Structures are given as structure tokens and as C-alpha cells.
Amino acid sequence: MRQIQKRPGCWSVYPPPTAPAANMFGNVPGYEGTVAGGGGYLPPPMPLEPVAPPQAGPEQDNWSIPALSEDVASEAFKSYASSHCCYSSGPAEDGVITSMEPYNTFRYRLETYTESRSTEWAHKPHEGEAADFYTETAPRPWEVQAPVPSLFTNETKEIRVPYTSSIKDCHSCHAAGKMPCKECQGNGYKQCWVCNGSGQKDGGNCTRCDASGKDRCTECNSQGSTDCETCKGKRQLLTYIQLKVEWTNNVEDHVVEQKSGLVIDNLRSVSGKELFKNNHYLLYPLLGFPNPAISEASERLIREHQSKYAQTSRILQQVRLQAGV
Image (cartoon, rainbow, N blue to C red; front, side, top):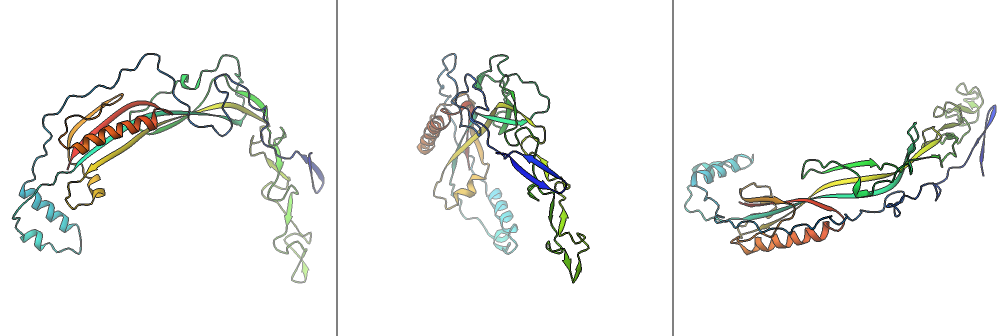
């Protein structure tokens, strides 16, 4: 049914807005499950050649952290005291260090860089683009070329899949290009805000509306209609499959506390000394570390990352950092 909107001097006929028809989007091989709004991440394809298993890295022979000298410890204490306006610097300046006991804290960090892909049917106002639907076979989601950004950098890119574009009449306005103005409900005029539509003000005619009780709608310039928000007045839409590619650096770390009394969250931001760092397509659990908790954390995080990300993403690279504080 069409809506008929009356405004002074003419009648305007506009179809009621509708949702996209079920057959608005075509059937593209390899994209059968694609819907408007997206349908989740797509599992990566099986590699054409067997992937070599992760190799064990060389065992380190020196995991020691240099001891902190008294001079460095004293300067650190003074700096800490001076950074607080209400702290007295006397103990830091005049105090004498009688003993020092090391409490080494180790932090293991694993970063897994992944690429995820998802598809959805999308549309935009048609602005003269050529329809290429079925002119050639559309590449499958993981065949579409998408240059990888710098490793371990988060980025998202949206790509129009080749050979999936077609031109359709706008479903919202039924190719009219116009829709009734929401501000005035398609009348072109609104109730005068000065006299509240009565035409009278303070015992006389309202000068704002010349006693008509109506005021021009500035939203539609008294036309009673505005450009369709879906097609922006173009009347037609370009429909296509949109591929969304997301590169994500998934980071987790594990801190082993040595009962130093310090807050673990504060230690996470300390750089410390880098003891070990390596990266590979897939990493092998850390071997030979003197603290078994770090070795256990390494094995657990690598296993968890493989379980969480390999099913819906392609793992591009892994890097681990072992630091001591």
C-alpha cells in the first residue's frame, strides 16, 4: 500500500519504507551463508602444504638479573620520595642502607598476531559504479588479496569482493528517491510555535504565521519530503559482498611474584631486564628456565592461544618476551 501525503497545493505519493527483500541479494558460490549484518568469523583454509611444527629454541645458559647497587637503590628511594608532595625527603637523604635482599620477579609475555575474516551483504547509494555480478567467478573469502600491515599492529580493512556487485531499486523508497519528511510528517508545514496553531496571540492575529496557525518546515523546505536516507536520493543501490579483515595482536602475560610485598599490577609496567625474546610462526614452550612457574606459564599460554585463535583466525606470527625485574 502507498502512503498519500497531503500538503497545501498538491498531493505527494510515497511508498511506505520496507526492509530489504529476501531475494535482494544474489547467490554467490562460496558465500552461501553470507547475510546482511554479518555472520561471524570464517575459519581459515587448510594450508596447501604441511606446516612445520614449532621448533624448540636453544636453551639459555644465563638467566641471571644483575644485582642492584646501594647507590642506585638510594637514588631510586630519593626519586620516589621527591615525587610525592607530602612525603618528607629526610629519611631518603639521611638514611643509611644496612642490608639489601633481592626479590627477582619474572614476567612472561606471549603475543599472537592473527588475521580474521568475515563477510556480509552490504549496500550503498548507486553512484554510477558498474555491476560486475557473475562476470567472473568471485574469489573465496580467504583468496581476496589484503596486504598485511606491520606485524603486531592492530588494523581493520573493509574490501568490496570483486564480481559480487549488482544494482537494485532502493527498498526503502521503492526507487522514488524521496520519503515523507519526518519533521512535518509530509505536510510541508508544522504547527506555529508562537501561537501553538491557534492563529491568535495576545488577543490579535499571530504575526509569525499570519493567523494561519502553520509554520514552514525548514527540514524539507516546505516540500513535505526529503531525500531517502538509504539511497541518498539516488533511487538505486549497489549491493555487494563486503569482506572485513581484522588484524589483531592478542597479548597475555604472566607475572611470577617472589613474595616481595609489591603490588603485581605495579610490576607489570616496569621494563626490567630483557632476558629472552624470540618470534616465529608458531612458538615452542620455553625450555630450561630455572623457575618452573615460568615454564608452566609458557606451555599454558601457547596452548590456550592455539585453542582460542586457530579455529577462527589465521595465526601469522608469535613473539614472546621474558623479562626480569
